[in-house]
Image (cartoon, rainbow, N blue to C red; front, top):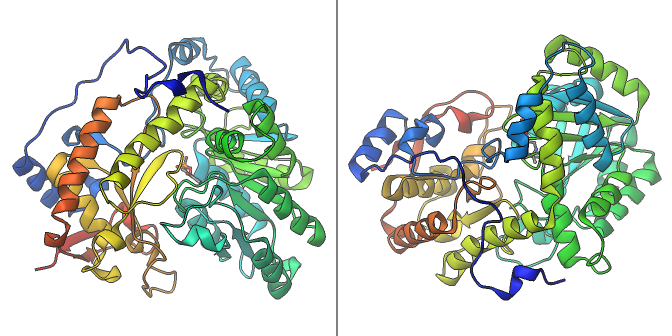
Length: 463
Ligand SMILES: *Cc1c(COP(=O)(O)O)cnc(C)c1O
């Protein structure tokens, strides 16, 4: 279905700006010095040294006037605050699960969930686990398995729902491992680590059918549920005239629970939740929650944060917002593709993923082509993206290292923060670096922790 603004080429941000944050403009020399101090890890940079920060769309969105009004309204009572009930109502309006357990962010919800259901000998299949999800599954001693469809493993293959799960592989996996060793099946919407690709309702129904065959619960990692719903409306037959909140409720109705980072499609700067229908699991989860997050009516959040999320959830399903959001991400991706820069296609919802393996074929996976490209984009233009490849996924719990299945650099777009001219600048810088890709060199890691190494590892350029 065409949106009213589709007749114009220019993307109008559907908001005006009434508060600005200056960006400090830096030179290549300043950025090279910053890189050396940061051990060539972009997570170690001071953000004031970044011009366009596309590290993540997580918690980096701009809040609306109504969200700031909610911040003022926040009631900081320890238990049973009206802000909690407004949060609960807003969550359950879209996701009518019986139990909603707030958390300070998505990984806290994951830590609690897998603390309750996972453990040694267990396996948790997903389309593709996000890095914190995988780490939280593995931290309990369980195994995290990715079963995305074959198309989802190839950056340049076009498919409308590349985030879909391979249901035959799921069925075979459950039979092989035995249903007792699988506490639940997870589906990530949209599939962040797989390129921000959506999952269709048809696929969710097929996953549900497999789960029903074995009596297994299905949980959504729903961080980008609204973007996923928008793609369903655009691409899935029969949904063009269905309202976004109804599509969201249809996705929720197929699941038994969810984890959520409100830093994504909550358009808040912090927050998350765990939700489910199962009473026994919910009781165990609330007990863990009290241990680590706080009382179950605030869960590590201030009342004002609960208000910002409650309002953010109302705004994120607005069709003018979603139209702008998805179109402005595609604008960046399509411009890069037109310049011959290999990207994951079609362009996902929240980010553009450059295929560093294809752009830098001269750098082997264990010399981190994605890291090399990410560092170059920062050095040349002050743009901060993130490697999603062997640095992020190559180190295993037993200490061995293998190449990741893809070597990507993700340019994630914060919600409602940058304008079209910022994005035009990004396009110009990426083109400049891509034209000189053959000059880029690999890296080696000189220090790293045993898990989630990409956050703190230090690198050295190879000669
Ligand atoms: C961000 C994210 C998480 C973790 O949420 P945090 O709020 O960063 O802890 C989990 N899954 C997916 C798909 C995500 O994008």
